[in-house]
Length: 110
Image (cartoon, rainbow, N blue to C red; front, side, top):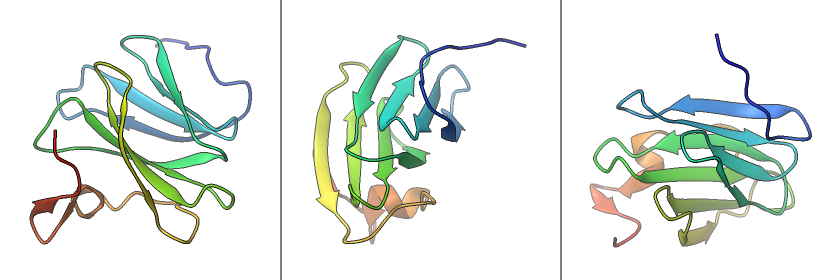
């Protein structure tokens, strides 16, 4: 068992990458942490929904809470936000593959 310190408020979501080598956590502190590089990225409200891309290992989608209402797409190697989509509502559950593509077409070009 391992213990990680990074969030200053409760953790709302935790997802393992497809390879099992990295973990992403989202919290009420509005941060998303990637635990193999100790990097974090920010939403403007609680980051509650997380989904690793099944076909691109360095791509993570995160969904914000009531104030943020965005799904953000992150390059987990660089920490760069690749795209941000305002959904108009809070994201409490990532939609897996559907979060990362629309009818088989990626929402981002990388």
